[in-house]
Length: 147
Image 1 (cartoon, helix red, strand yellow):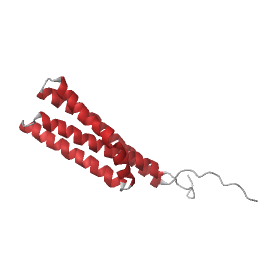
Image 2 (cartoon, rainbow, N blue to C red):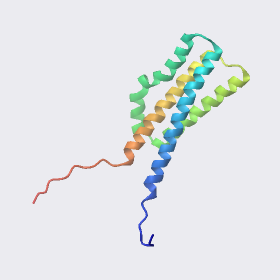
Image 3 (cartoon, rainbow, N blue to C red):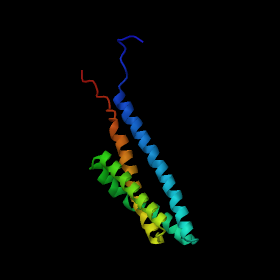
Image 4 (cartoon, rainbow, N blue to C red):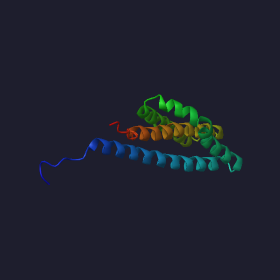
């Protein structure tokens, strides 16, 4: 390759690859959290109602909070929102793991933790989708020639 060749801009590519890695880790965390919360619930009780309550607590924030969180995401720094949501989700999982190790985990704590993890998921996913939209400008329609 010659010395005069222009390298493509790495700023857009590195930003996009970091965003895709963040998407990947967040989706893996969602799946692991869903499976682990279900396993913990079944280990505490064999009640299908309890398992349903955990699943409801995990998914109900999408129905209740999607619009307000979208408005908040439009008015807040997206990177801070995404990092904060994943940090809170991590803290919740560490606290749950500690309670499991200490063998002091009531079912009510699992349900509340599932709800809080669901809220964090809503915040992260909406902020990530909004960040993806703001990265690339919208194409403007061609202006008519006035000659």
